Length: 60
Image (cartoon, helix red, strand yellow):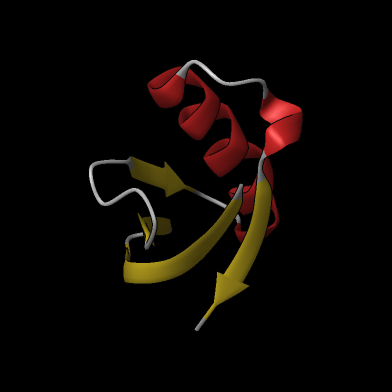
């Protein structure tokens, strides 16, 4: 499942992310490079699907 991630807010060294396909998913990271792994982990936890089923694309 392809997930499109957008940065909703960036403050105080924290990036709050929005996942377009899963609006109920809330993810925050400290470093931009952590985004794909954090989103994959959260999506797998939320949906019960394996992590390898997700492909993360970061938009701006």
